[in-house]
Image 1 (cartoon, helix red, strand yellow):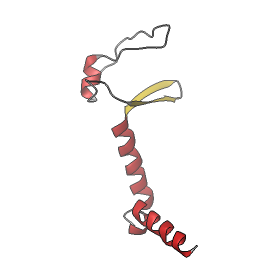
Image 2 (tube, one colour):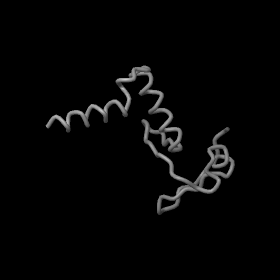
Image 3 (tube, one colour):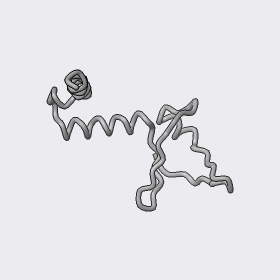
Length: 83
């Protein structure tokens, strides 16, 4: 999708074009993450950010069962019982 010109109001508001919202599944609104990367403003959906975090976690931890959240919580419960 090519870029379009937009205007920022004095209060900082900007409307996203309908085609952009539709392609991101934001036709009815929703939460997004706004990032400043260098001199670029990036707007990403929450789902996209979560998926990226999950992919990074898989890459860093692999499929090690001992590296899951469930395993972490189970270990903390065992530690709490020992105290």
